[in-house]
Image 1 (cartoon, one colour):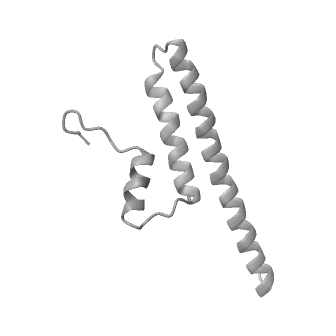
Image 2 (image 1 turned 90 degrees about the vertical axis):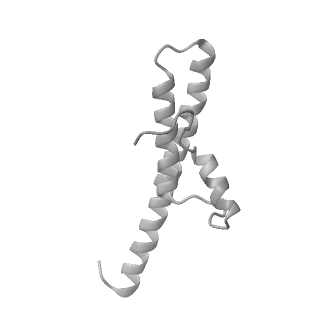
Length: 95
């Protein structure tokens, strides 16, 4: 996809703000949203880190920690869903 000059793709924060303004997002993230945010942060670090300054390295560390937390949250959401589904199969007697 080719973007017009000076147009950058929207960040996860910008997309969330737009969806919230439309009443389509309540501030909670699903597993796929956590994953997407984490991957977006990782890609940002990789693309910005070709010849980093010390300040950029510090910022990248912060971003990597945030990306890791997004991915941990996504895994936590999947674990919750798996627990719910396992409970349902136990309840109806099918494994």
